Image (cartoon, rainbow, N blue to C red):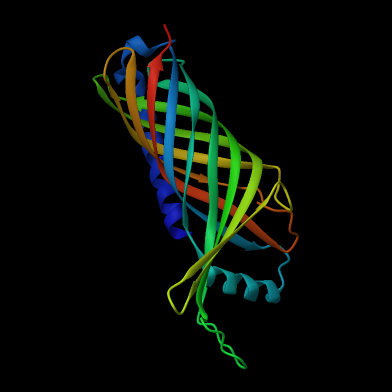
Length: 248
C-alpha cells in the first residue's frame, strides 16, 4: 500500500501545482468548448484486504492470503465528454467498460499418501471483475502551446456486470489444464465508488483534435463483496490514452 500512497500523493501535488498557474497560461480558445474523447487504458490491477471483524483469526487469514495474491493486467475503455468551463479548468464525464481483478498462485504441494502422476506443481487462479464505469473528473491544465500539462481529480461509479474466474494448473510433466467459471452476481457488491487521480500531458495536433496521456490511479473505497469479516477492495493503476475531438 505504500506505493499506492506515493503515487496518489504525486498525482495530487501535480494537480494542485497545475491549478495554481492554469488561469493565466492555458489557450483562450478552449474556453466554453465541448470535446468528445475515445480512451483506452491498460491497467495494473490488484486487491487490498482489511480485517473488518477485528479478530486475530482473520489477521492470520489475511496474512496467508496476501502471500498468495498477485497482480493481473486489466483494462478500461470508453467514451468521455469534456466541457472547458474556463481557460484552465474543465469538467469531464464518461461511460467506460473495465476489467479489474487479481490473481492467486499456489505451489509446493505435498501428497502424504499417493503421489499422482503427473502431479500438480503449481495452480494459478485469475479473478476478473467486469464493470460499467461512470467517471466524473475535474481537470486543470498548464500550457498555451501545443503541449500542455494536465492534472485531474475525480470519482468513478463502478456498476458491476459479472465476475469470471479461471484456474490454471501446471503438472510435473509440463502439461497445463485451464478451467473457466463465471458468476453473474454472486456475493459481489452491485455498486462501488473509486476516487481517481491522474497527471499527464496533452498534445494538440490542431484546434479540432488532441492526444492525452495520463498515468491514473483508482481505488475502490467500498467492499468488493458483502463479507462481514474480511473486506476486499479492488484498485488499479494504468496509463490512460485518449484522443479528443472538438465538437463544432
